Image (cartoon, rainbow, N blue to C red; front, side, top):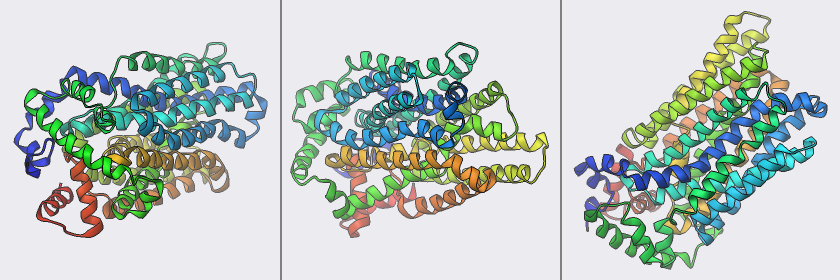
Length: 498
């Protein structure tokens, strides 16, 4: 079998573009994607809900109102939990499978939601946030890998991006829930407690779904894996996929004996892949996305809109744009490509952050014009409009496909941990930095980081659109060791030219 005729290879894609629509219409694939994507919904809901709940937590607890540090800790303790959950999630995925990892995440998340809703003081609330974060961390590793491994490569980018749509949809849902509970007694308790409902739903549905067929192949449960794959692929493709995965599984078994965390940094091609994947995850956070999502009601109030309800309503609009932009990203990522999409996204992000910075600089100089308040809100909306289709889905999609099978769980967990550590740094410092240097200067700093991210993507990220996992692995070997054959060279050219 030549590389051009491999199932899912770019040459194969060009000959059969109608297969994309066939797979997108497969109800079994869509069911796997949507149910696994509820993990993304949990991620997004928790990210968004705390921004609105914080406005009312401050009203209930005087200690929180008087302390920016305590406010930041309530927000960021979930991220601490997510760092731990993501770090452990890679090992849990490899040892016990994607399905069991998802079920575990749901149990932990539900427990955390109950603790938050019943919290008698800020410190029990912080404990609940830690538990919720553990569940989110495991889910953030598991969902994109599960979806990617159960997806035909023709539509893998779009389906993994569906997980990001669930994240942004969760953020939109959280703002909607926040708005609905603004006049209900116990406001923030309802806002945080409701988050356990999607976890219970996912747990119930996941019991009826199979394990990832690739993980089953790696564990020598080929009969079950083939049964799952027969519902994903048509008969003409199934035999090729089985033969291909069987040969790859045998190769990975030999590699698995040498798998270790140290090899991620020792083996050059894996180190290059991890640099690209972890770098993208870090820049996703340091370019400010979760600053916007965590603190958007607060930012709106900084812009001069003091009403809690109005701040939440405007933030709901921002979250709706985030979800809509992700829908666009699902289409673009398999048509436009990961690399070009990230570069276009970052270009718009830089311009939007400069608009935000300028609006706040003018306001801080003494101008009380409503125009500049609205300019800041427009800057927020533009930021989301450019970020959501590109830098939202691209890091998660790339990290689900750039690592060898034996290292996918480990590297996926490590890169997700980088994402959450970066997230923690931003969430824990944003309000303090604003107090120190001002809102305008803070957004200017983030704009500079976005410029650095743009250069990083140009230098370190190859195009992986439409390639199989094994073809992507060959790109990294080519980058690490130079040309090792005409087939590898042609793949690199396809990746860089896409």
